[in-house]
Image 1 (cartoon, rainbow, N blue to C red):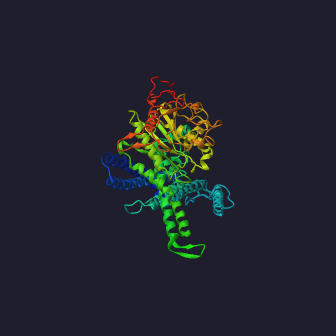
Image 2: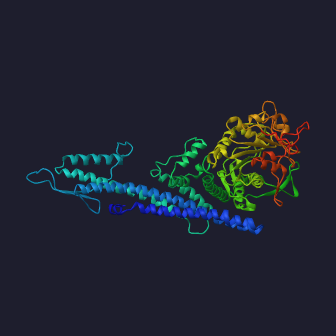
Image 3: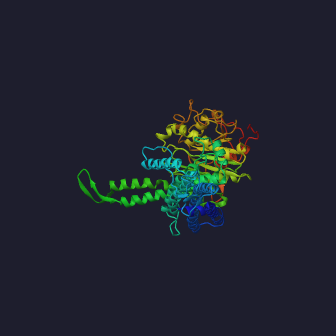
Length: 632
């Protein structure tokens, strides 16, 4: 960039362009939301069958196109604003130098050189002549032993100052200083141009109608490039408080301007998506970007694997190892193929969880099912999936379902469906707004023996669970006035018990199902009001109680929530076994009694919950056959 270009430059034009891209980004976001919340939802309400599923899949691809447009345009917005910031800094320096030149009655040529008039005391009867000087951009301000170029620049600056001090024309030194300021401004503008031109070119999408895995992979790289280039522009943008509480996170977010929120969301979706205390719609947007980028990375990794590791021969002749002769007509799978498949399946495994989340997105509108909010996501390790049915920030009643042994990101489909069934049942029982959340926010034990016999998984999860609940309270419209219920299954009940022991649980009711023990011996130790701990134990569910109380769950006295002495309200059930507590008949729209009782607790209809008789045959408080209301 030269002097004339910088002089005529208007940084506001780049800001105008940035606003245009922000408008396009917002329009793409709205189009994406309309596809899911109106078009897809409308189809789900009125139509059923394979044709609808096919159409929804096509709409999902279209929604992905809009989402990609939204993400890229948001990055371009931040890039253009950053470029405008850098150029304005340089232009302001130039304008200040030109103002000083005018005050000195200096003239500035089109190449940025400065002419100064004759001035000073006469020498040999003549006033020292004027002249023209060309400035240079200054080097480093301090001596840098590892930067010879910087040393050379510093030396040149020193020589200039020395020459100025001995020049007969006093205006010479001032002209040199102004010329250097002009050169420095041009230099900084050139650096900004050279920095941002390639970054902006990289933000150009492929000229096709398909958003492929490569595009999403590039989007993640683009965010990193813009983030590194925008450091000066974002210098005053505060990062979220390190290790901040949900309340502190909420205050940080509210303290940002709209432009700052947009910039942070565009550049840091991975960080923003996991912050408890951030509004659900913001976390959802960030995590959907994380989801798309993670899916792209996995698919690209799978493609590379297939290219670099062709499928080996699957079958080979089976041998009789004793007689060392082939067995005619029989083959066996080769060890090479087994190893190849195991490695390939390991790469693919997270795609199951991603598919389950996308399937839930596509079900919005199905029999009134509300929008899904992706409040947590990670495919790393055992993974994380936190997905809400309906917005918990506006809900009057919130239920957080925590699964137990075997839960993982890749195995999230059944647990997401349980959250859906909880919503269908609970929402049918009230005119108020309900949100149900499936919380796979911890590393659950993956097998009964030996993992589920240990309490370390619950110990490690307690803090994360408390943080999440605190976040719900921080962002809900009514704050602590919202009614929150913890619903937990199997080892998940142990996790909730541990969370209660580690801190303020922040919920109003607790519902246990198939509990092997809650790490406490009495409901009074679970950090909710008396009478607000509820338990379900179905007929035939003997999988955990026979062993759980003797290992991780039963506390000191080996008591679990099924025991009368524990003090929980023992709810009636009509399901069997360990996994039927969320049975729901989609054809009739009727939940099981086990599920309906949970819905009554979630919606605050405690007096309508049907309870079991005590072990001695007497009625439990609030039993549906008992006319006396024993609840506090």
